Length: 137
Image (cartoon, rainbow, N blue to C red):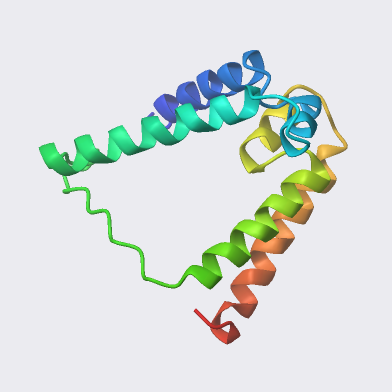
């Protein structure tokens, strides 16, 4: 059963986010009102970890689980789409009080109203999939 390692990593990720209070609506509220450094510190550590991880993958030419080389493609230039996407993501995050990862963590903790948030996130993703051929990329 190969999926067990992903389930274990998911549990660990959920525990870390819960214990660090990254899934707390109050912490997210503080962040968007610039009242606390807590969430910015968590995001900063995540970005630094990602940068270091990508550099390790590139420098040591690491392979994935199947033995294939990991190729990280460069992003296309075009800042408007990144600004627009980031703005929409940030607005949704601020309005709902959670981003996609913690939705599942909060559902697992028994916060059932997040089912509406999950439905909205999935519907938005579906809508983007339908409209993406018509959008300027």
